[in-house]
Image 1: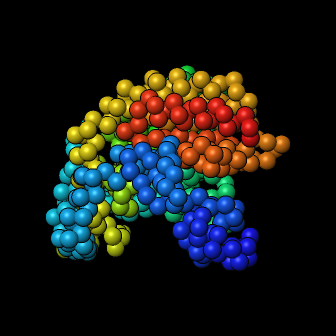
Image 2: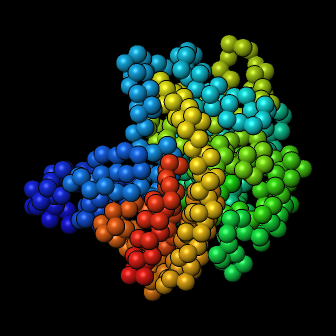
Length: 451
């Protein structure tokens, strides 16, 4: 296929606007298949991308769960432009710039508890997860709990692609070729088709699965476990919805056994469930919150770790002129990202986008579940403005049907969806309305039976 692309360079350029697709090694992609039949967008606005030929593509996934305010929102774009003209970059090691501090305060205003008073900025969800794990381990050491070195995650969890994230994550393919952190274990997944297929909202069965954390505690002893990390709702692994009472029970266990609870809200943060964070939706407060994606509506890479005061304070007991946390990134609190964060959070508030999700969620649920009964669909899951449609595998080839649906939706229906194996994941921008939902669902109704 690569030879064909080289020879047919003029045809490729006509299709894509790019003469040579060879040199870029694309992330999480079937590179050969893509370069043989490219899918490229070069413009965006609101709910739509545009292909190189100008054809609009309805964004059913908010990019990668991140463009919550829609694409190219003028207020966010203008804020980035103004900041670039004023200050392009300033280091945040032993110095800083005003926008970083303003961004931290703006973000904390979205948190319901006064216990959260500090933010550590990163550049992505993956960096945020690894940062949170480091903070948790260091906190236990600072408070004299030197045996607390074990980190616990969950099977089928996705926590990014850093070495910490893939270690506490539960996806075997993400770990296959890499060395992992030691002192890591996992509890069982909540996903159970036999008990919960076609549940609407939170599944009624499965609260008891939280007690698998007690098995890990019994295995090692609570005095050896530093933290447990979980996604309130697992998005990238196929939209796995927590059972009723599950997160509440996890919080009880962590509190009882002096284990830090980390919420990975990279996907659920910033309105996906109709609230600023899943913290408010479930009324469960962790000790650390990890976020990214919707933080800047995808405009500038940025992530954050939101920390309770007691955790930050534990690091402040040494000489005040000594570095208290030996960790950071060149682009932590980057001026452009900080400006994008402030403008994005103002857009969410001023335009009532979280309320729009709450108002649409029932319609979204009904539309998704109207696909029950069509060929190949074995489960449908929903919460807020998130949807998962699980399909049977074609002749045991996991992922083939999902990939075929993904391609047909893009090329034939001009709609962008996301697939994980044979699971379709949907998360349109928060500015969506009923006509956009209808178009996505009607297209899936046509395409899924064909694949």
